[in-house]
Length: 76
Image 1: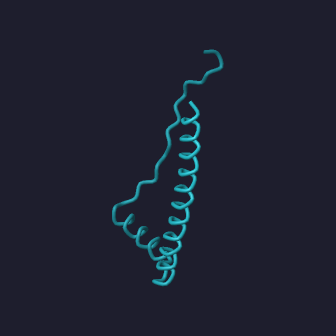
Image 2: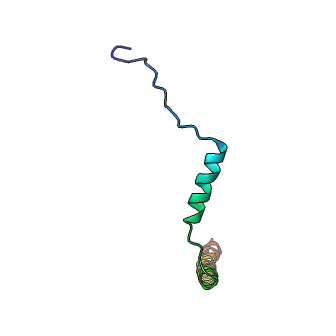
Image 3: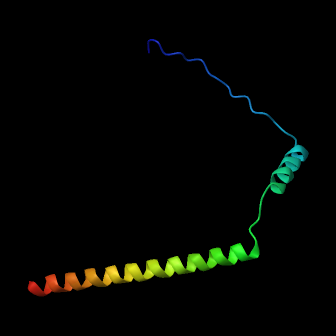
């Protein structure tokens, strides 16, 4: 193909030793801020509430569509 350069570019990857990798992992793990027990419980409660609300919503929508389909089929 005209104008196509077939040169290959090789990426250089910095290689670290397993010991250096473990040091870096430990350093990054120390930066993690874990949630408190209260935050974890509150998040769990909120997930349960939202899941229940969505379940009720989808059950009601399904019930409405079911009634519509049954009505339309009764016309035939």
